[in-house]
Image (cartoon, rainbow, N blue to C red; front, side, top):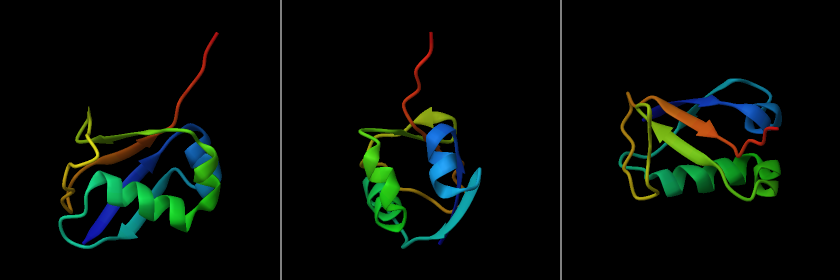
Length: 80
């Protein structure tokens, strides 16, 4: 299945784009997606954590993704 992922903050800078399209196996979990992204973009390993939102809600790592899900990768942010 094809997944479209919106990227924000430092994740966008690491990947070099604000959107990413990936091929993934059916029933891939959020945890599997994170592992795939870290393998494909090793610089993401420098981030201690990031959140994954699916269909505008934060998703747990065991959530199974579907092809038409709206996925966003949200790195930690700081402000002041």
